[in-house]
Image (tube, rainbow, N blue to C red; front, side, top):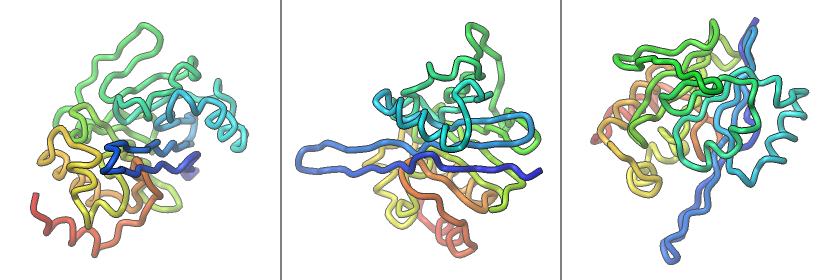
Length: 211
């Protein structure tokens, strides 16, 4: 059985330098593998109905979700956690179900396995607790759902988008984790734009960038 990854809502981010206001919402993704149904990033608190309807279109109810992964703690990524009370919650590097917290170390690349083909790895930089979800054995190859590690595909040629406009708590660390993901993924779903295919040319271009 292949794992599947579907985008429920494609994110966006637009910064207005005059007003200094950014209009943004994240990408929300649905992952299915044998025995698990995972939602990654739950949009804002104002998107409750949109999220529920998006799941219904995939013939899924909120109580069917087994795991919720929020790639980091910003408000556009965690807005509907309370919908998924049956699920284990992975918020950044914090893992819990109800009042029980799992002590797990993501250090040295240690992955938290959700299923045979789905795992969560630490990819800090945008925030120091960022995580990404790696999904293997899909029709696209290995898919990485990365939150704001990548703002969108364009931030590869324009690093200002992720370093300064989206903001990075540790740009050097974020660059290293971007590089790591580019080396293992065939397809990336970024935090605020459409998914994109990882080509050899893209890998080579990023590797040559100044950190």
